[in-house]
Image (cartoon, rainbow, N blue to C red; front, side, top):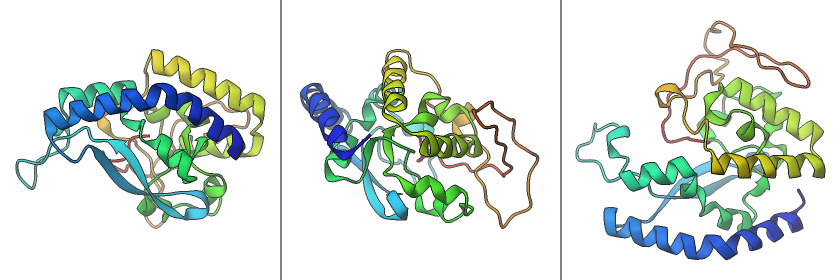
Length: 222
C-alpha cells in the first residue's frame, strides 16, 4: 500500500480512533495513573530505529523482580485482547515510521540476529497489520512469521493488501493468536548458537522451514 493510501486509511480510522483513544487514555489515567503511552524502540525500514507507541497495559512494579504477567491490569488485558492498545500507532503511520500493512516491527536486538535472507524483512516500512498477522500472529514461531513476511514482500499487490485489511477486520471482531502459549513466541533465530530441532512446517505458496532456539520476551507482542 502506497504512502497516500496509508494516510487515507489513517484519516478514515481517525474518525473513530481519536475519540476512542481519548476515552481509553482517561481510563488508563484513572486506573493506573501516568504515563498513558508506552514507548519502545523498534527497527523500521532498512533497520532505522524509531519509537513505537502503545497504550500502557501494565501497572508499575511493586518490586524489581516482579514478572510482567501479574502487572497486566483488567483494562490492560481488555486492550490487548481487542488490540486497542496499538491504537496510538496510527500516529507512527502519520509520522512515516510505519505503514498500514507490512511486517510488524521487532526489537533491534532481534534484528541483530537476522540472517542475510531475513534482513529482507526490513525492505518495507513495518505495518500495523500484515500477512503474518492474519496467518497466525503470535501463535506461530518467529521463523514462520519471518517467512510469511518475506513472501508478502515478494508478492505484495493492491489485491493482497485489500485481502489483509479484510482479514484484519475479521480478526478484530474475533481475536485469535494474540499471545503464544505461555506468552512466548518460540524459535527466534540466533545463528551464533547451536541449531535446535527444526520448527514445524507451515504451508505457504512456497514452503519454508527454519531452526532456532526460543526467545522469551514478553514486551514484544506482535
